[in-house]
Image (tube, rainbow, N blue to C red; front, side, top):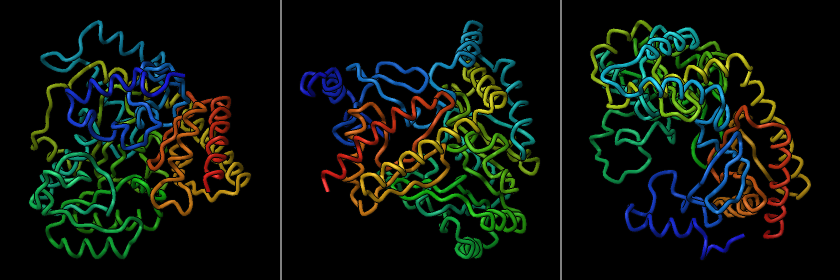
Length: 409
């Protein structure tokens, strides 16, 4: 293995520092993960990826969510290549736009219509804009700590943000009915929407599935106020239920935002909505130069059809359960307190008594060396490409990681 000093990754970081502020931006900055993590990657296939120095990993982040079927899925790549040979970003959309919108309406349980964007922030922001246009009101309720995107009204960073950017946000606590009711009372007659993530997936905290009582009360309150219930399904969409992540709860939103798993790595996002907000969606001006790109839309159709026809969600759940049970056994073996929360196909793994994530960093560094790419404090993702043999590799790497944690204690 190359040393850090003469690695290709280090050389690329030095080059990047000269031309990119900080060397990298946003959540892709490996400096925020720790010194063991590579910054640059050379290729990916299925559920494996290789960094620029040739090290191979079983991928437990799936490009931070988008690769739901696995990298280079043949059906998706064939559909994308076929459309690319015809045209991508043209003077207007290709026929595939209508095909995809029809598929989304047929797939997502609450959907009467669909609109397409490029990333999750586009979709959540458009949902909020449509809700305000449709109600003529300003206040939007969001849960404390929830992530909805990276623009001033919702970014977790306050750098460059003014108080006016968030003047009409009111906060409540996820899964807390009393807190939600108090926030709605505070909004009064100016309530436009309640925006809720499909499940609680705050950075560095135990995940929470939505309580049925909370979800149903949110629906009742929005209906009574004639306000929009918006589900931010950017992270969870098409990994929990193809009909929408709250469909198993029997709760349907007015608007939903999708992105990560919609096109298996191709840049795309979508809003789905009910007829209550159809007219409002025609009144707002939301657009982008690349929002009509036909290649990503073709990839999305292939992705959704493959998810539907191969029972991919059930497979991801099975692999996630195998991982969760294996990690539990390893934690007991090494005498380590471990918390595993959230949907098994989107696992969050945190160590007890680890406020600064030092144990997590030790674990992840050792697991990386053994060939598994974990994240120290973000929920992870499984794909349909993960097979039992891959989970076995991951568990062997996790064994090394937990041994390192136990030794450092």
